[in-house]
Figure 1 (spheres, chains in turn orange, brown, green, blue):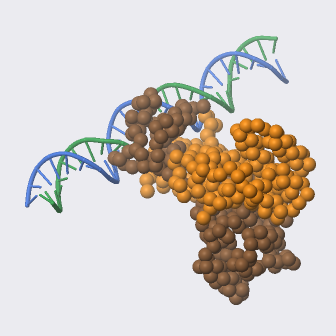
Figure 2: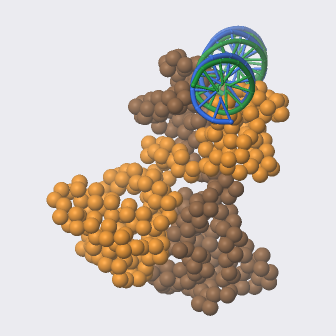
Figure 3: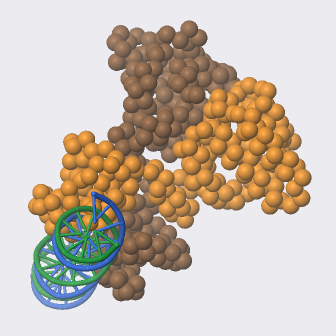
Length: 218
Length: 218
DNA sequence: TATCTATATATGTCGTACATATGTATATGT
DNA sequence: ACATATACATATGTACGACATATATAGATA
């Protein structure tokens, strides 16, 4: 354990003991360094860790303050297929499916007429699309809109972050096309259920809609 | 945009262009600083950001190397109820429910007889428990075991991280007790479905099991 | 060949100095 | 009295040189 590690731990305890909340000012670098009997350089290194996580921010002449960490601040940097193991990639691939099945209750609680119209619009464009890439784009747009309808900002952002992982695994696993699925459930069927059906029906059909992905799980 | 911000961006591009993967050595601090025409101090600060995210690690005399970032490395530091807004807390509360509903397919794919025995064991202890705190502990154990059965390490760890948030919201919202739920679905019913039923049945009943939480969503 | 010692090395820490952006105080003009 | 410009203060940002420290490698010895 290096000195900077120890400083970091001391800072966490100090922030917790002072019950600092976002917006609160914290002592300046020089004061903190003196209080802990270390050099300003080492203190700065520990503080950089906090800044990286979004827990504090610093401004010239003004000093430093506590901020609201953003869960997704560095997520795209961490969730990089080149850096992760196959197992972790598979985990996130599955997590995406889990969320897709899990948000159904949120959809049924929070859907609005405008939402349904928007989905209808996407489906019309999809049904008229000629090229494969256009259809893919609209498929993505359909699912992204479901996440918007969930009304959960965190889940919506999470899905966006997981998208490259999902694409990567999609290519890696050579997943067969949806249209090859003889029990194929289209977006239009899903929309009809979302309009007039139940969450249970929607889930059953979403599961079928995603069956080629679920087949990859063993 | 500070100089260190620019260095950070340059480093990300450099790492990507070199196709560095975990285990690869990267040039030493002094070389990197010289290559970018900055001081070692500024370079160290940028590198500290990478270390905080777990993307690189450094060892004395050995230099630095690329590592596999751990998604959860700093998660408990970020997901601190004191630092997050009510909206974000609510989002994570819902995310927990979404995952609880969404892992059902994984459960049915990956359950083993040992898993079912383990659940049976927990339920027996729960049914024999006298105190409220003991029942609560076993309730948590039951759900945690479901996450283990999912066979998805990331989801399992995610649930552990989300637990304090869920508890915090549980207290904050004064959620009524499960036993007050007239359509109460016990763990034993859920286990029986897991043994002999379908994923659809399990979801329907899990939804009822968690209804007092779902009632909080609007 | 195995063990010990000396040396080299790259990160970790320190102290000093200066740069820079920004806030505050003061002086001046209308 | 109010508006504007200037000077000064301030805390973070950056640089440099020095030294500490843990660890790897090379060389010497038994």
